[in-house]
Length: 489
Image (tube, rainbow, N blue to C red; front, side):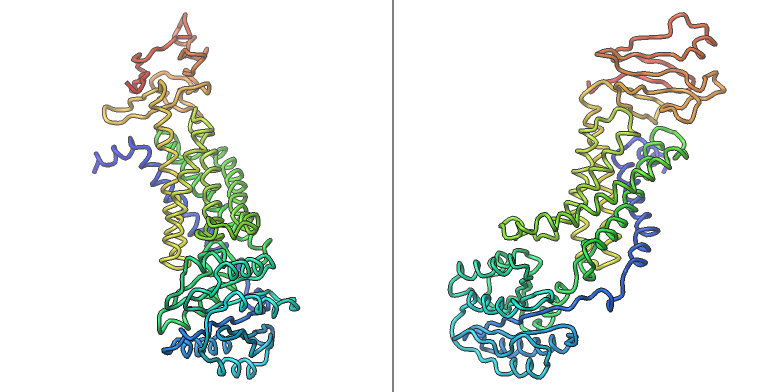
C-alpha cells in the first residue's frame, strides 16, 4: 500500500486526473446540482404555446398496419396537448397532398382528420412540407413540423429545398422514420441528427413522445429540459459550469501543492482562484449557448447536420472550459507555458466532453451529468499534466529528491523556483536545518541556469559568492533533500 501511495505521489498525470475528477464531482454534487434545482422553473411558467403540424406520409407503402399505428400514436399525441394554448394541424401526402385539419385547437376536428387518413399513392414529401409551412405562416406561436414517413420522397432534391425553406423560416422540423426511411437523408433535411427518431412497429407512440420532448426543451446540460428563454438558459448553464470550474481549479491547485509538498491551499490562492474560476466557468457555459445562436445559420451543412447543433454546442462549451482551466494552471505550475497549458486543457476538455455526452445520454439526467463531469475532470487534469511532462522532456528541468523513493519535477524558466521555509515557496525547507524564509531561487537567464541565494541566508552562512551557474547533472544538497538539474537524456 505504501508503495502504491508513493507511486501516486510521483505520477503527476494520474494524480492530476484523480484530483480533477474529485474536484469536478464534488463541485457538481455540492453546488452545481443544487443550483440547477433552485433555478428550475415550473412547467406552467416556462412552456410556451406551440403550433404543430403533423405531416403524415400516407403513401401505399404505409399499409400493413403502419398507418394504423401512426394514427393511434398521433391521436394520443393530440390528447396530451394543452389545446387551450397549443394549435395543431394535420397534413398528409400520398396520392395527393391534403389538409384534413387546418391549424386548430378543436380536438374533435383533429381526431376526425386523423381517422380519415388512408394509404394510397406515392411520396410527394416536398409538396407536403410546403403545405405544412403554409399552415404556419399566419400564426405567432412557436412553429414546428413533425414529419412521419417510411420511405424516400419522389423528388429528394425538391424535398430537401422545401425543408431548407422551412428551417430558414424559423420552423423546427422533426422527423420520425420507420420501415425503409433513410435516416441519413432525414438528418440532412432536418439539419440535426438529434431531430430524427426511428420507430419500429410498436414504438410509434414512443417516437411521438421523443418528438414532443424536443419541441418543449432547449437546455445543453442534459438531454431533457425545459423551454427556458435564451438569457435564462445562459444564466443557468453559466452558473453550473462556473461551479465546475471552481471545483476543478481548486482541486488541481491542491494536487499541485500536494505534488510539491506544500500546504494544500493558502487563503490568498483560494480567493484568487475562486474569483477567476467562477468568471471563467461562466464564460465557458455561456459560450455553449452562444454557439447554438452563432451556428444556427449553418445547421444545413453536412457537418452540423450529422453531428447535431446541440452536440457541437456542448462540445464547444466543454472545450472552452478545459482551455480556461488549463490557462489558469499556468499561474500555479511554475514555468508551464501558456501555449501548453491551453493545449492540455483544450484537448482534455474535448475528450472529456465526448465522455460526458455518452454518459449523460445513457444514464439519464442527474446520474448522467455527475458521471459526465467526473470524466470531464479526469481528462482535463490528465492532459494538463501530460502536456507539462512533454515540456519537461524538451528542456532542462529541476528534480527534487525528497526521499530515495519520492521525487518531484519542476520546469525551469524565467519564473524563479524559490526555496525556503515560507508558505509561498515552491520547494519547502525545514527551519530547524538553518534555512531562512527565502533561502534561494533557481531560474533561467538566457541559456544559463542560475541558483541565486538570498542575502539573509548568505550572511548567516557567510557566503562570499551568492550566485552559481548550474549545468545538467549538477547536484546540491539542502538539508534532507537533494536537488538535481536534469534533462531528457
